[in-house]
Image (cartoon, rainbow, N blue to C red; front, side):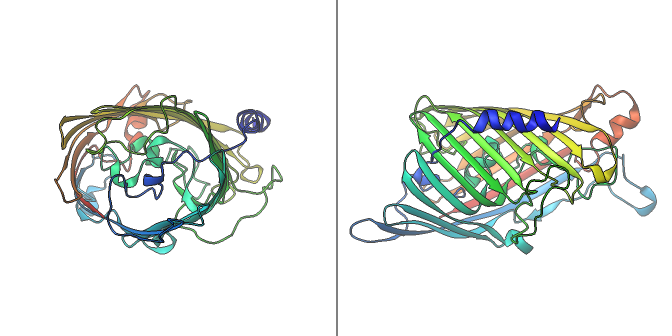
Length: 403
């Protein structure tokens, strides 16, 4: 299996030569600056630009859990993890220098530990076809994560991306999930005609770790890091990193993408995780449409003495439509094989939402409801285990302000 994975990655990414496929106005990954003057400092020549930005979110959440996993003897309630929260409180700045270098730094005051530093990077552009980015930034995997944070269709990411998979062994420290999110590393990227690419190497430790603490793989004898790449085809020009913006109601863009990554000994030297994904996104006037499918193979290392691997898949389709210039309706259907392809059963997770963009204020109101259903399990025990830790009914109302 190891040789097959390595060959797959080489076959996809070695022929690439590299490119920047982000739009300049959404490059900070947090707030779209499209059409905004805002506040900025710039030289007369325009070769240096410094622009601060801000994103604040306040949410009210309600989560209802089934009885599975609850111990009534300890007065555990079906309603938990509910109340008010601050998902993000991001303050940052972005800019350009010398007509070659772009930079970005943001702090998420709602986080703690290493995640307090949400991202920091600089990007040196040799040409549209080739650039190098280094620092802490979004790994090149999945349309959902690469969307500008303040312009997601729904206030909560697809559960199939964020929920940990279920393994029939308790040896590993943390069960992996599909999403890789922010990480420390370096990548080359670019845009060649209508084809964009990103290829990078990252620590594989996620957004909460800002130190170099990796070693070599005991099994494969290569650095125990995250190797990741993404290839996109955009026949109508660069796809904006948005899932709904009232200032972009005349767009006609489409994106097809494929990505793959290998996280070597990613969880305390317990597993090697290979991920692959396919994505589609479209903006057509008032309509936004997207679909993704992803696969993960989890293989234990030799020292774990488990001679088997596990395969998982997930995906979603979602759509948004501006029924009025500032009112967007949203739908999503999310699927996940959380317990692996060797066991029967799926999680199906429909969600519905609505977004309202307040005029002349940069304030956005989002509301959504999601139901987690279970289908096809061989036994009632399998059915009960599959959604442990996930709310059967969840509702979120979120207010967002950006500058």
